Image (tube, rainbow, N blue to C red; front, side, top):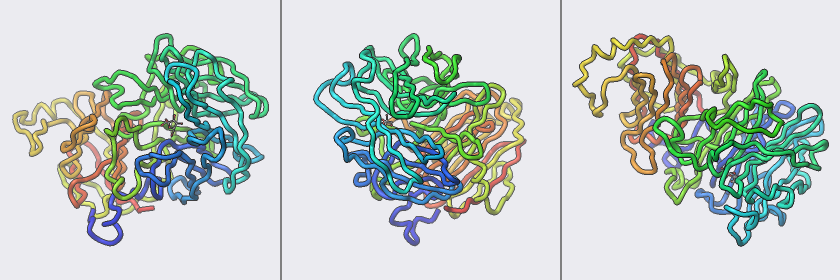
Length: 481
Ligand code: FRU
């Protein structure tokens, strides 16, 4: 990519395919929905500060195809006593009366709210809008008095749905005992809510569960959570905070014990957190995540801060349930951006002037003998061992597969654990890569494993070299949106 021409010199890492804040800071996707054809993505937003220091608002963007987004500015601001320190995360429920938005109003007070039931006010609030152009009055639904006393006041991020004529709400929570949980509420009218119980694990599985989501795929029920405080493993939970899902044995609207062993991470990459799902008007289950992570003690930041903004949302992904597991694929609409299809030979370097492209490697037949036959002593220029399949980007980012393990490695990066992420995937069937100006999404084996990361190429050009014998390798430029 040429960074020396036109406006790009000013903001070279501005993403072309992903939703970014016009200026300032973005975190969680909120209120995702489709209403009368229009997709709405709200998001946690601090317009005046790219480091997120300030009061959280809801930003708003609309789209007719999940790919081309138009920014609509601030939708909700902290302007009431019960949300004075932030309009925190929440969701949307749509019906014939419009869009019903639920969020957490955050109020900071003196006191240690990490362990006891004081020091913060966490209000759950409803705002209605006919079409997303103007917000109605904020209605207070739940306050501190409505949460179980064995919970701290880390209670937030409502997700609401309707089942059998009743509304259900899940809230992420931290118990006094330092255990993550989800609180379940029910309502007949979306206004009066009654506590019905919790979902948690037998033994602590992280101290806090943020951004819960419940959904069904055919006959299977799932709970998505963002647990904080899980120990880091070589193949699991490699980021500071996690997000993943478990299957719920007793259905989505019932209090129950959750099996921690069944937790599956949504994404194995460096930059992924706080996803939310919704069903669109075609009946597809779509997931969008925050392509970022909470910044713990200033360890994590992106060079775009210098250009006055930080973070992005992931591409919208369709979730499917096949043979007992969940798959994620970029929504079909993304394929409309493909231009100049070409087939690439293994070992060949492709130079891409725009740096926005898609790679698909399929029909992969990896045979262990292929790798054994290579000269094991011969390391390549980056000191990498030969592997069965490798994709090098500008010699500073490498994806590879060997012996059932798929890895994403940054060769020139240090600090904050930003060097390698690994996943045990079994055999390798196919890889699909979407590369944006400063972000990469890698879908392995039809999206049964995904790696998402920000990526800031060191060189001025985009080069990709794919070494994967016995496969078909195709490449497309992607039209910038
Ligand atoms: C997750 C989160 C939510 C909260 C929001 C505040 O990233 O911490 O729990 O509502 O961000 O911006």
